[in-house]
Amino acid sequence: MKKIGLVLFILIAIIAGTLFWLRSNLDGLVRDAIVEYGSEMTQARVSVGSVKIDAVNGECIITDFVVGNPKGFTTPYAFKVNEFTLALDPASITDDVIIVRKIAIIAPEVIYEKGDRMTNFDAIQKNIETYLGPADSEPSPGKKLIVEEFKMRDSKAQASAAFMDGKTVTVALPNLTKRNIGKAEGGITPGELGQRIAGAIEKQLLTAVSFDKLGKAAQQAGDAIGGAAGGAMDGIKSLF
Image (cartoon, rainbow, N blue to C red; front, side):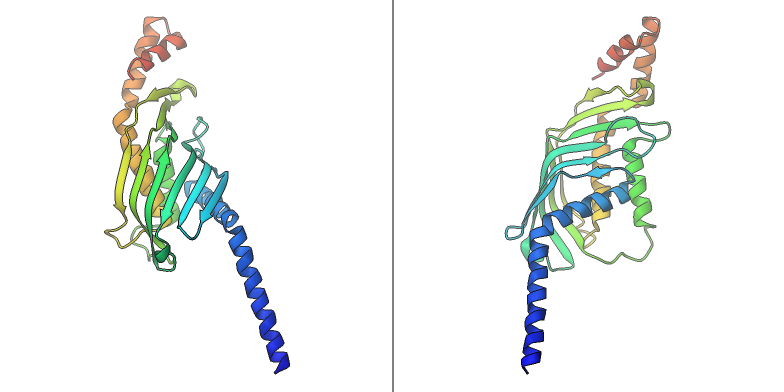
């Protein structure tokens, strides 16, 4: 009996130590997961400065979040934000479907680039689709999400195209609010959530930016001054 008691004591000590390690390292584990799986899904470099989780209140603050561009694009990134917040329903953490009360992104920086065949946001969505697999495939195991409210406001957006040699012009991007994302399906995967958010942002960008007009403005301005690049850029900026 003494031996059994000793073994149980050792097991309890190991379990307690493991739980303490997980609790103290949870922020780092989540940060590493975002970087690893985000980069795999988007086929672009995803970086995160820090993750701070308040498990009691279900809040998570992520800082210095950057989604780079897939291969073939010249601008430094597609999306960057200094800080954004997620608030979860703590009671749903152990459920199959986690309720995200809100995702709040304030003052992000967005660069919308048109490549030879598609935009950077098109490429990111396509890469996520490839990662997730065919739509009619078996549902992937793991936690699902329902986002009650997604907000992105005070965005700083820029547009660029191949003929602009890496230069950008500022464009106006309205605030974005989406509610009950994934509710109709009974929950969606994190990859599907990323895909939908990228699609919603690009939908706004498509409204704000016309690459056909950018090209025509560059050509007309260039012709008017004998092809000077500075004049072409002035002509493009006048559209916005």
